Image (cartoon, rainbow, N blue to C red; front, top):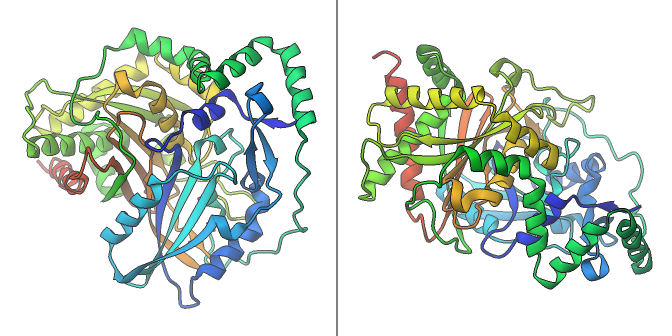
Length: 478
């Protein structure tokens, strides 16, 4: 029996168009070691470890007539050099040029006729640095056993030797058209309603399939419908264009923890309060009307794991892939960020109160339904948040904020130490901004993915995140 995509995973293929590519990504910056860190090393490293992620040698194959959902098949012409690419900035490349490159790469859809991932080694960065930009389609994140391609290259030891693959990989033969049709007929007997939905999807460009996925997420949808009213309008919801802008901000985890201790909140509350303060300053810089009651609604997927557990990331015997570092317990909340509040301490307390109210209100029923349907896997909350966003963004929230606790130990790729890691969370329809946040090795890294037309000033917002961090730190001694 073929390995069939789930309804949710298939929906991301059907829903994808040139304005809303459905991949998650990341921008990791490495310090080049004395032994070098070049394309050949990265290519060899990934080639030797692809056996750990068999999905990354598979492509999507459509069933004739779309009688049932597509299946995963081994790519008979798999070419690793197509997926592992080389790019360079004019020396000495600066961060702004790297972010511009990341924005252009993230704007492009992945090729659906090939395995749905890409990695770019970016050379030419100043200060003896190199960058790795990853793209992974959300259809790849299909269960807790899935691993993001970016994790394949990471080690906990600087000088870890990469063993050769146990055996030469040979693709399994693709199923024939006749075999796919027979399987579809079998499914028709076992699940007749599904075949009707898929045939209708083929006629009406996947509308029926999207409706089916929404029904599958009924536990989430019903909870949200009864809990909220439509999100406030504003510049964060605009028609989505084909191009993106990318900007970053940084903070120190110890600083955010100091704020947490001083105010009795959580690190996630502090992150949300920082984003709130930055959005307030950004709206004012645009001349938007901001009153004491003005809010911006955020969709916030939250890991229920503690900070202590976040520091105890577990690693398999290979010593390479940092899996299990987040877990699969998730709650997804809608939070009205109090951008109208001018006092940073009051903003933090209001955010903390809202998050506690969610945790105590039984809203976890919606999260449980979501996890049951979509699974939970690297890139973990970033992918999960993007899934939620694509179902409900038009009417329920203004901005997506995902915060993923990462390992608090250094990670290496072919001897090169990873210095920074910035998530890139995709936009949904009519969404202008997604904010991905990841903590790693004592740092907190904000990745701002924005629509190029709607938010030409996303770099201004990124700078205001830095200012909002300083403002929050100032409340500790106040």
